[in-house]
Image 1 (tube, rainbow, N blue to C red):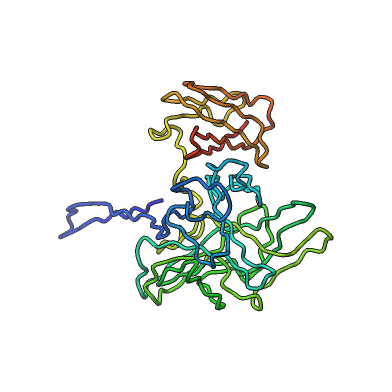
Image 2 (image 1 turned 30 degrees about the vertical axis):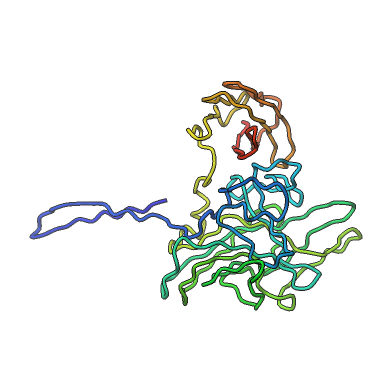
Length: 341
């Protein structure tokens, strides 16, 4: 989204010139939606594979990186992983998951990244992120519990597993209300006047157990041992519109355009009431997996040295589906939303 201001210079009642100044949105958080990766995750505790992000909590903590390029068996694929079945906020490919409270006592997971430029002291900045609670059922037990203080904090220094971020009851942005929605992403937004030249942003719950509210579930299989939340679309910007919903309209940072020279494929038509054709500019060796909104695979196919293939949607219910295209080496995956009319 850009804003255009047209300025006219007038002298002695005569119009001399007109020109445009364009203001563009700037998010200071690189890889703000975790789309970019150096390696596809293969298991939990691999946030370092999300380009620029790293662990800011103790070595034994295991902040997770979820990406559609990961095989389903890894537990960290998208939309369905081991602890969640969640489409990313904008329907893209990735997000992160963090423990924000644990019964072991001040059990926290933090991650962080360096901003593209330091904050300017005295400047107003708008902050936001999206979060959703996760719930899972495994081994006859129910995991997941609502909590508050899902937050974001700025820092002048980088932290690491050997020098973890502090739990000292302060965050530049956090939800004081308990977030119990495990289906829809919740936007948390606010603003600050920079009092330091902050260079890093980090995510997690920075409040101790005494200052964190949890809501235990009352059921025989509910363990109530941890709160686990997903984060997506992190924003630090001087643009209030970007932080207050404008980010929703952005395209995925590393997504599939209808045709791209890098991924060399196109999908057409979309939406469709019957058939979708996937065409490859170069013959491909890939796996195609079509999933419904619940993460259930409704169609799969191995593509070997084909220039195109067709998926018959005519027997599927109307609605949104996610097509995952994984290349042979699984170094990347493409997720594309397909609408069945």
